[in-house]
Image 1 (spheres, helix red, strand yellow):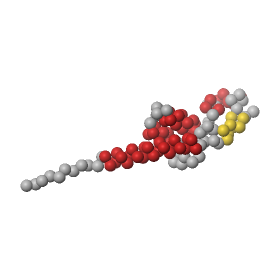
Image 2: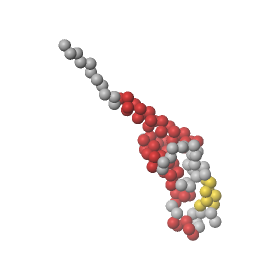
Image 3: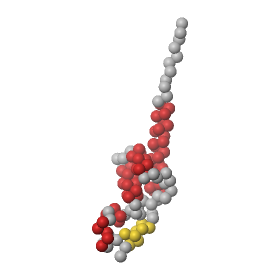
Length: 109
């Protein structure tokens, strides 16, 4: 019999029974996450929290799943996702200002 479970990443309720006959074809991560995107986000945020994974990799996972709205995720996950997004955006805007061509004033005498 399928058990009601709650996704660690988004908090959604879903049903999964690891002991049911149909479970052998379902990935083991279903015991903790309702969707593969939630599993991947949880994993990348865990690495980000430990300073193992950079912010750009967090944003890459969001892009992989076309996630533009982080409001569906639990507060702790959402906070870190938004932090990573802001870090990447700040880095991009710094790069834009640093890459402006520098012109030298020349004196023509």
